[in-house]
Image 1 (cartoon, helix red, strand yellow):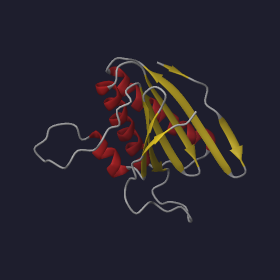
Image 2 (cartoon, one colour):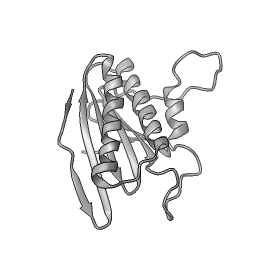
Image 3 (cartoon, helix red, strand yellow):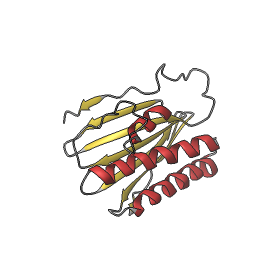
Length: 168
């Protein structure tokens, strides 16, 4: 597992904090990803003075866990995680090598497992799935604070999942 140097810059009154991580190919990388997310949010709190609530800390770990678990379970090869905070929003992006776009399954209380995407859609403000030249990137957006700043409104639905093709 390796971390790239995070890019931190102040643009006017907006602070952007971000970091990227290459996750290992073992099942321990899921726990590692959660720990990296906590460390990232703690650094945002302590080094940059950003307000990070306990609820956001927990939800971010949940989203990271579900997205990385799905990548490990369904995609061969490496998994990359990118965390970014900008304008009061936490972005959790996970890239894997499988181009198959995941879909949430219909509710079934008898089904065991395969609820990860449903969980992420329930807690995220926005969910975006992008096919890339190789694989896909799934990005979940969460508000940094429990109460959003004025002028920042949550979508009327919990999630707007989209599939886009990048044109290069």
